[in-house]
Amino acid sequence: MRVIEGNRLKIYCWAEDLEEEAMAQARNLANLPFACSHVALMPDTHSGYGMPIGGVLATRDVIVPNAVGVDIGCGMRAVKLPLPAEKLYEKRDAVLNDVQRSIPTGFNWHKSPQDHSLFKSVPDIRVIREEFDNARRQLGTLGGGNHFIELQKDTAGESWIMLHSGSRNLGKKTCDVYNKAARDKNYYNLPDSWQLWGLPVDSPLGREYLSAMRFCLDFARANREHMMRIILGIVERHLKISTSGLDQIDVHHNYAAVEKIGGVDHVIHRKGAVRARGTVIIPGSMGTPSYICRGLENPKSFASCSHGAGRTMGRNAARKAYSVESVIQEMRRKDISFFKANKKDAAEECSAAYKDISSVMRQQADLVEILLELKPIGVVKG
Image 1 (tube, rainbow, N blue to C red):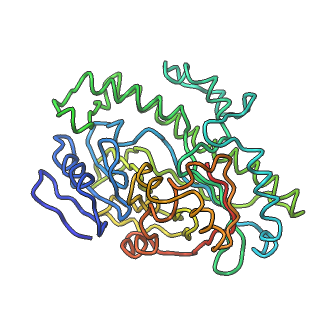
Image 2: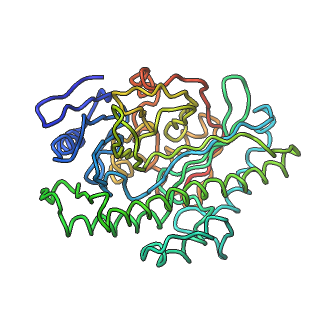
Image 3: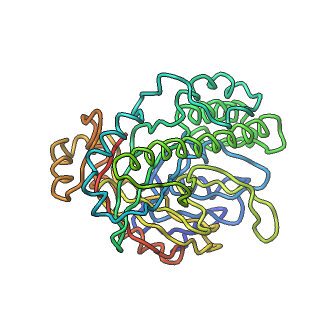
């Protein structure tokens, strides 16, 4: 970790290579009048909208919609199967084929509304009401971009399932509505170019956003839970095993929460960062290992760690630099079954467009302890 000075607050940075735009965004965070303590940058940090992805921001009594992001509650879910990986390997194509047919990906939704107890207590907030019918069909859908479902094997030869998804269009609409409201009010007279407009937590808009964000977090977790239930059912049918009662790990990496710093409540914004407490999941890029870790709760990172490998190039640049066929060939070389309904944008998520996950893990040795390395044997990409 290095310390970057010259701003109102110090920046604690775990990223060895930081692009200029991400650094400029981090300096904006460090100069916010309501930012507290310091700013933390995880080793996977890269530029985002307003706040760099991989950044952690602490405030007092202020919530910043763009410091949470558009995919509110995006995160990971993983479960270890009571099955040797070699047995899962034998059925991987059949399992993944059924998963792809059963879980909508990209812009696709379920044809009928999905049931969940979450929908019995919906907050009376306009954006949530307007998106409610769509949300019921989006529950249990993967989405696109870097969202995925993977079959994996650990270093002991045991099998795992891991998935990455979030709050779908519900989270995006919520962020857009309250980011615009914060921009229009501009309570703190911030430059528009920063895109870091905040809402006082005790204002009507601030309270509304917090309530809507929490519902999106619950929806995102329920979305992953719903998909995992479908996947485990498919595994049971093909492998003739019971998956009842298995422990599942679930972590968010786009959210804000009230946490104590020095005994005082602060709003901790994690945009592409995980709270490093208990067991956490850190995925690699497509075709590379993922990790199950123990969080070390380092106070200098606001008890946070990276949420993945972090991009080194944008999606458009990746499509220009790499072909779809090169991605398919890479998966074949690594003996990874690759399922994607529409492969034309596959190069956007190729491993070369991301930082080296082993380097990222090395850079955050003081943030997490690696418990298991998981290697992919098959993947469904959004």
